[in-house]
Image (cartoon, rainbow over all chains, first blue to last red; front, top):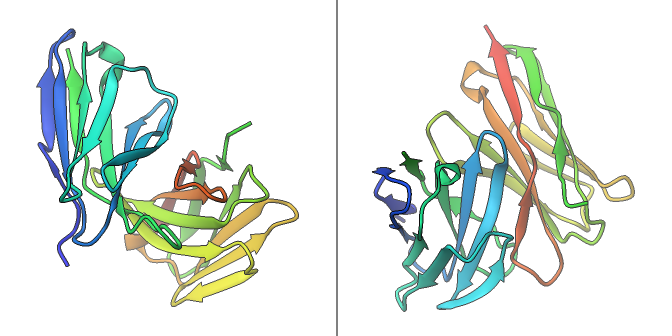
Length: 113
Length: 111
């Protein structure tokens, strides 16, 4: 099976802009979760989508949003970028049931200048 | 609180065993996981354990779970230089697919 893919791998944006990140999960997986990883805050949970519905949500402002399509692919959007949004954004694919083990993509490195 | 705690660093000699510890927050957590992250990469699932188990062994990896103390450990036997990475534990509460990750332990294996 192909692994989790994330595009783009690297991104440089300016403060105030918006950005959309994409994640394609493992075939057959219905759950996609998004995480923000920074040296200071570690790995922070953003949200989880299961069968096109947001099932769980972390403690991030409304500037962070996401969606999931019928083929389970997911996108994450960040509007009005701030310097503090610079981070590695990781997507995790899971069956979404049972043990719920997650398989991570390589991440998108976002730099906000 | 919601912090899953891990020690920051661990250094071992090649061929020795490594033990990475984790204290989690929710005694009703159903599944606990261990992940490995190498530089510039995403997280790789190593193993997981269901909360009604005390131990799980998978080749060089042994997971021990002490529910009373909310303590999880990962033992890596015959540690190799390729095991150098950051190791994260994570917990999942009952009835939810929201995961809480630990702060990560950086393992350095000395040749």
